[in-house]
Amino acid sequence: MSIAVLMAAVGIVAVGAAALARPSELWASVLYTATATLLLVAVVSAANSKGRRRAFWWGFAAFGWGHQLLAFWPSINATPAPRLLTTFLLDMLHFVVTGSGREIPAYLSSKSTTVSTEVVFYQIGLSLMGLVLASLAGMISSSFAQDVGADA
Image 1 (cartoon, rainbow, N blue to C red):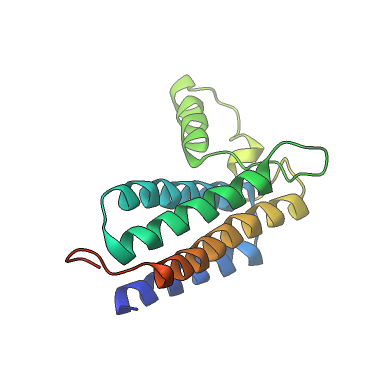
Image 2 (image 1 turned 90 degrees about the vertical axis):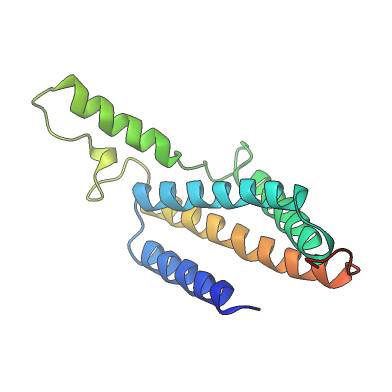
């Protein structure tokens, strides 16, 4: 494991701890969007790698997407998926562009939430758990792979 990988892991843990300490819809949105982005990068990386790297990224993507699907799949007892960060940005842009003199909408502020703090906490936690499980699956998958190619 390289120092860069360890630094990235420490950064994710630090951001995750901060988000869980003060859960908000914005934090949930940021982590949900970051998780989806990392999982999409994993698919592209798997398609363009060889050997153990390919096995790692396929394992990461498969378990990561599987966890996200199971965690946020619409059902009676499921935790609702957070809004993507791009939705927050578009809402903010709409607020600025319309030029209305009203206050900023509550859900765009970190002070207020339209969803209970418990639900937001679970949204953040599920996104983080998805990354942890994806990472573990990637490591297990790469341990089963045979070295093939120069970048193995």
